[in-house]
Amino acid sequence: MRDAIPQGTYKVQALDRAFAVLDLLGESETPLGLAQVAASLQLHKSTAHRFLMVLERHRMVERTANGKFRLGLRLFDFGNRAIEQYDLRDRAQPHLRRLVTETEETAHLALLEAARVIYIDKIEPTRAVRMITRIGASNPVHCTSVGKAILAFLPQERAAEVLRRIRYERPTHRTISTPEALRAELEKTRRRGYAVDDEELEEGLRCIAVPVLDAQRLPVAAVSVSGPSFRVTAQKLPAIANHLLQCVRGISVDMGYVPSGRGARAAVSA
Amino acid sequence: MRDAIPQGTYKVQALDRAFAVLDLLGESETPLGLAQVAASLQLHKSTAHRFLMVLERHRMVERTANGKFRLGLRLFDFGNRAIEQYDLRDRAQPHLRRLVTETEETAHLALLEAARVIYIDKIEPTRAVRMITRIGASNPVHCTSVGKAILAFLPQERAAEVLRRIRYERPTHRTISTPEALRAELEKTRRRGYAVDDEELEEGLRCIAVPVLDAQRLPVAAVSVSGPSFRVTAQKLPAIANHLLQCVRGISVDMGYVPSGRGARAAVSA
DNA sequence: TCTAGCTTCTCATATCATGAGACGCTGGTC
DNA sequence: GACCAGCGTCTCATGATATGAGAAGCTAGA
Image (cartoon, rainbow over all chains, first blue to last red; front, side, top):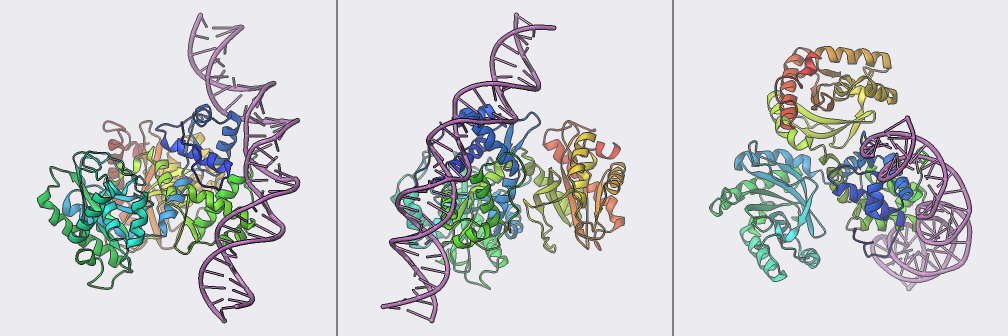
């Protein structure tokens, strides 16, 4: 059922089990009872029970009125601490909001982790069709505009390392599926200064993204604009890209990067 | 150094230790090395090492370029899953944004957990003085407007349970410090339909909040407006309260609560 | 080159988590 | 109203599992 103990030589059974419990609760739409948890994870009742009690003590898990378990809010605290160090989100938000007003489409802010991008913020235009993305969720780099935007401007070695880890899932028939194709696409991205995802993650969804560069000109994140293909047409891309570039320049300045002129702009000229 | 094993009969040493590690990394401003972690937690080097490796495998922890450890982005994923079930945040956001435009002050969305409130969203006016609150952070109920707003409209027994857990810290000299005073304040809150924090959490900061009620008319969260006392004056409170009430009514409707008329409004009439 | 301070690794030991199973509760069925 | 089934809680003897002393590798700075 669950994928077994991930490879890697260090093991602490109790921890692996505890995280399996959290995973399970995280996947589940609804809170689960002790018996369900124990069964899904093939743990003995009493073992599962002990874990859940300890997790509850740490507020990693909480009980609903009817005694079922779900993820606890402590995790929310931890999660926000985890990205706090970047403190990108707070600073980026006003710029993202302006971007959304300008483009009337959904904006995302994403970070790279391993070979996936994690969405750390999302702003939707007031009367948009609700997008299904969830803050905190992740997608493979190779089928997202944010992923390609970051990857394209990463230094050689770091990019290579990420490339090596990509497994090339294909959510749609347009998804890039070979390292060569991806490399070409990244080259293209570098040339024009922005990355495009043309229904490569989801049918009917087109996205465009640019990286947010730090003081060392390294991409720390990316901002994207996403919308239905019929609205985000090929002709509109350059205009949107301009808004995006202005947006990330604003973010960079707010983060204290690049005193003036160069920098974020470099994404285009580089 | 660290507060010892929390009381509670169920124990899994490995878990307590792992969470202590996460706690430590969460508290720390900067990433920590293995030796620092081991020393702070009084763990043996090799034990700390093993834990960190396992935590890293689960992406609960990640290593910076120089080999130090900090919280991993997996936690961010978990954290967002934890509040997803409420799915309040997404739906509330547009309303909060409108609220911020109307009032030109910072808006917060908070949940109650145990005897504390947890901020799950924050929107700041474009040119505001940056507030120090962090999404995911928490404060005691008795010194926040959101806390009082939720508490005031909770059913008798649940409120009593929360009251029992309050420890009455006093961050400022205006902070409510006795159960009696709090009870009186809650009564007042119920009568006027909104809660006020008059520099009870922080000198110079005034907040006003109203609860978000669900279909059963139970408060599931609260929305607040906060700003410097000189701007958020006593005279302005009723006007702000009106915006707040409109805001939560909007949220309730969006959540599918209360088809029309009654409901959120009840906060005032109740 | 040497040293200091850090991380990584190994392995024998006993501590600690484990799980069989008993008990008790609740809610549904006849 | 009595029975049953399913679930959560709790105890305790057992041995599998995490533990930590210490050795070995690193790296950077003098």
